[in-house]
Image (cartoon, rainbow, N blue to C red):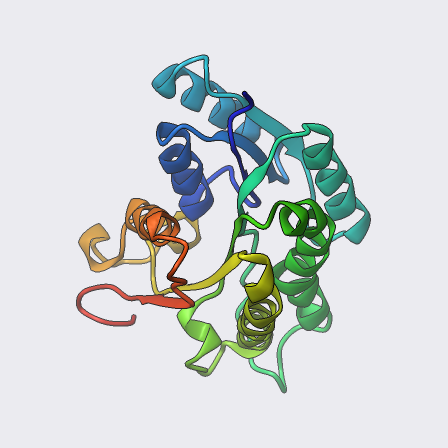
Length: 237
């Protein structure tokens, strides 16, 4: 019997990597993508060494800002012919700036990466999930999905839109027994915060976000955790 599959985008570092490791320890095979093949190979080696060779980690270099590569990754996943139990749309990018002054192209780049990637990948992977009437889609939103801030510009726009997608997808998938959860993390200690002069304990741990995701997945089929807001204990930065 084939093991269940978890699909994670933006998987080679930070929250994505923590999710891969958490789900691998729970018995899932993994399909993972990121822009750098070297980092993906390191992830595969780490997981298979720590969890054991029975766990399969399938990796594909993918630029999630490009629709053609997103669809190629989807086809790569479908070719594995395994039931997709969990889809985590985690790939994302942040570039600071204000709407009136940010660099030309910021909106398009962040919409492509933070929103369209999730839209196109989910659309391609949903049909067999709908046929099986099972599966759980997690969209990695942000506290920026509900709380705009100066210098958030196009990033806030893209994350508000991803939360909107999560809400409508949740309604559409009810009859197919597919759960949809939007995760809205605040400041999490990842590479994107490198160089900031704040102690590590001021941030959330990526592993905590991964643990929260798995807790939502473990709920019975009678319950859907629709939105999950996580913030550092001392509040937003």
